[in-house]
Each structure stands twice: as C-alpha cells, then as structure tokens.
Length: 358
Image 1 (cartoon, rainbow, N blue to C red):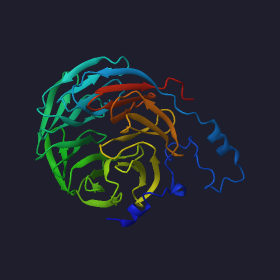
Image 2 (cartoon, rainbow, N blue to C red):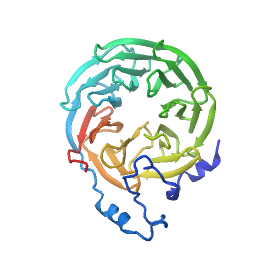
Image 3 (spheres, rainbow, N blue to C red):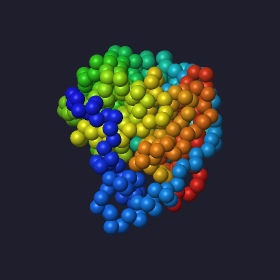
Image 4 (cartoon, one colour):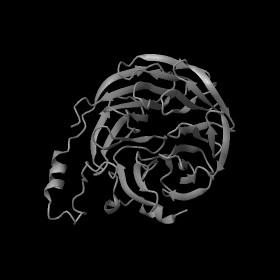
C-alpha cells in the first residue's frame, strides 16, 4: 500500500497534468501553472474564453426494465446500446430511435454489469447467479456460459482484442478468462471484499481493479502479480475504476462524492471532480472524448454531471431521471450519452449534443 496516495487524494497536482497528451490539439485549461509559455500568453487565454460548453438535450426515454438498472453500454461500433438490470434481463436497443431490438434471456438472477467485445458481435454479462454469459447479440443466443465464481459476479470487461475477459466477484476474486474456450485461465486473490470494477489497459498488459476494501490494485495480466496498490483513504471507499483512453491514467469514483484522476505510475492524484452526490451506490464515471474532453457521471441527486476534464469545472447537469443515476455510457463516435436509473425510475435516457464539434 502507498500511504501517500491517500494523503494526496484530496490535492490536485495540476503541474503534473498531461491528460491530453494523446490529443495535443486540445489546449490546457490551466495557464497560471505553466510559466514556459509566458512569452505567448494569448493561446491559453483564447482557449479558456472560447471553449464551448456541451449542450446535451434529452432525445429518447427507454422503458422496459422492471427492476433497477445496473449498467448501460454503447457498442464499440456505435450502432447499439445494451442495458442490464436486476430483472435478470439484458436488453439491446437502437440508441438513435429508442427502439427495443431484443432481450437476452437466460440468467436466473439479477445482473450487475455488461461488456461488449471490440467487434460489437458479442456481449458478456455478469450475474448474481454466479455465472457469466457471452451472447451472440445478433441471434440472441448464449455462446459461452462461464462458471467459476463462488458468489455474485459484479463486474467484467474485455481486452481490446477480445480474446480475454476479466471479471470480479463478491467473493473478492478476480478471474481472467479465455473467451474462445470459455475457460478460467487465472484467479487473482487480491481483495478482501466485493470487487466492484475491473478494466484492462489498452494493450491488456495491466488490469486495474477496485473493491469495497477501499483499495485500487494494478495487476500484471500475464503473471497475475499485484504491481501497485492505491488507497483512496478511510472515508473514500472506491467503487469504480478504469483506465483512461490512452491508458496513462486511472479514473476512480468513491463514496466521498469525489471522482479522481490518478497518475498510477507515481501514485499521485492529479485531479478531483466534485459537485455530485455519491455516498451509497456504486456509480460509474466515464470519459467523453467525441466533442470536448469531459468526465461524465451519474449521481444520487438523480442527475448526470459533466465536468471539463482539465479545469474540473461542472459544464452541464442533465436533469430528467426520477431516481439515482447509477449507470452512464458515452457514444464512441457521436456526442451522445446514455444514463440509467434505479427503482422508482427504471428508465434509460439518451442525451445528444447535435452541434458540430468544430
């Protein structure tokens, strides 16, 4: 464990922020901490005044789930939206029309998570029935039925080439699966409580996980060795974590109503995003990179929040849900957000910003 990670979790290290390294055309928002460009102060000033805020509007409200929605995910090709819920059902939707395309039925208990293969052909689902199903989305049939977890399966994700699947369960175990054979290749015993999120980096050499034991762990995929542990702090139990699109950073959400961006190589928290409410539920956050660079998250005040990734400023709040928003997903090519809510709402809402992102 790195005790310094917890100490620094409430302090943003703006000088170390290089979150747009893969996107050099996006200017840094913070001009004061950057003395080198002093001879030419005009570009930063222009960028901060001219950067457009998002203008997402509600396009569709999707109804059909009969119990709390737990995850919504756009397919990598952008043509479909998948959702899962405590009603045992996986639903496939057309995000552009709001039409329900098909149900994927087979699990015998509620679902906590879903993940698409990179080619958008298969969808994996994690269930309280202790199994994972890999579905052929077009036919609606189960291609593989993965068994091995001893308790609820809470989270899962494919690697980029989709030959591996990583899953986390309420037994504290992380399992790495060969998707073509449907066999568990490795079990990582690294957490003492529910594993609530697992995610591969871009080249699948690393896995990041978090659990209700309060720890974020980074693993070597091949050896199964835990390479690093980050601690959010005793009152900041982490419940969701993922690599950034360029795999240089980790985004985590915690029960102190804060979202943090980490440089996991130095164990430093670079930025903290606040303003939403998250003290009870496992609420996922995600990156939006199709227009501006935003952080998107649900909230326990029934809203969806968008922050500017660089400045940490709240740039839009989406209102319309009537209960806690636990699930969000951003479209891979278009300025579109899907959000899902629980219990008394049971709706998925599709939000779109139709302005051209020039």
